[in-house]
Length: 68
Image 1 (cartoon, rainbow, N blue to C red):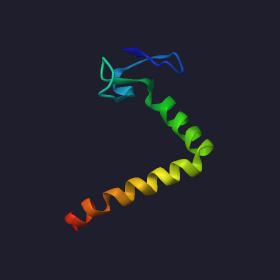
Image 2: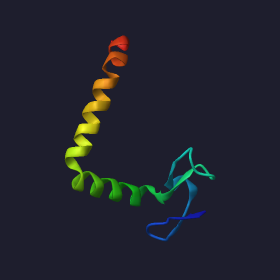
Image 3: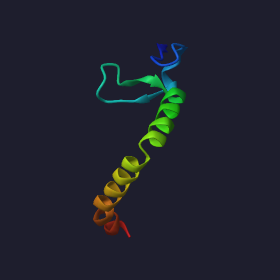
Image 4: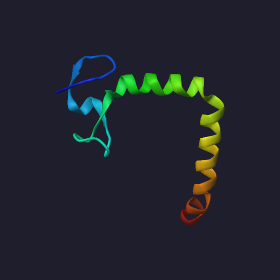
């Protein structure tokens, strides 16, 4: 069991995303709170998020062509 830092509810470990940078290898926010946060972030930074998505897609294009 782990407490979500956003909603402060004690939840099962399977309700947290994996994160290799933390000591317990789980994110501090539960999956539900993380989804809400990411939706809000995307809405408030829509232009930046779209640019990052496009850049990542273009960078992976040669890698994807190998598989096709």
